[in-house]
Length: 248
Image 1 (cartoon, rainbow, N blue to C red):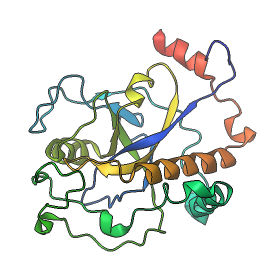
Image 2 (spheres, rainbow, N blue to C red):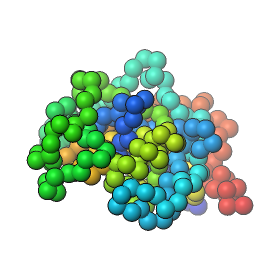
Image 3 (cartoon, rainbow, N blue to C red):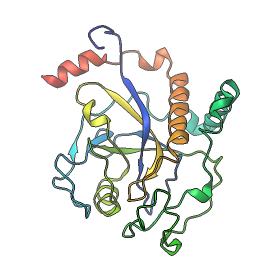
């Protein structure tokens, strides 16, 4: 792609990821996370390169991955409010058959369990799980669409156990989202990572929230592209040049 389209500046990687709630970040299913540099990290970090054991330990401490471009972060909607509800409404109007599949799943289906409580019986929706182990959180109306800017952790295998995510990533590094694609691209292509949160990084994974989360991420990407004018990218290094320098 870089050889054929030499004017490309950066790439948007848009899909879903797992959320990492903490005492300081009240992240919910359907929220959007966009990669942002934090401390010495460039927006996306490789959180491991070895094999994770079931109890949630990491074989190797996280390593820094290549940062994405920084000139186009935190779009102007921060001051004026985001346009995601309008974008989703237009999608439903243009493609009514998508409305049911990509709709919000309901706040009652957004349950966060304690990190040390495992799913009962392997049921995909955890209907048999003990509700006494649900973490109490303030009620949030689903139309209150939240966008977070933070570190995103990436590796080629999705983390599945809450203990390591809370203790190591959230508390030590400030990561609030993990995903499995960016790590294969960050070193060779400048990227902005946009992820809709479809589940929490624990043992309760299912695909119920995936369509809505993906639609939210796509809506944010559309809004971001609407505010990136030619003036904002003047002088920005081309992706092929950045890749060549990184290789050197």
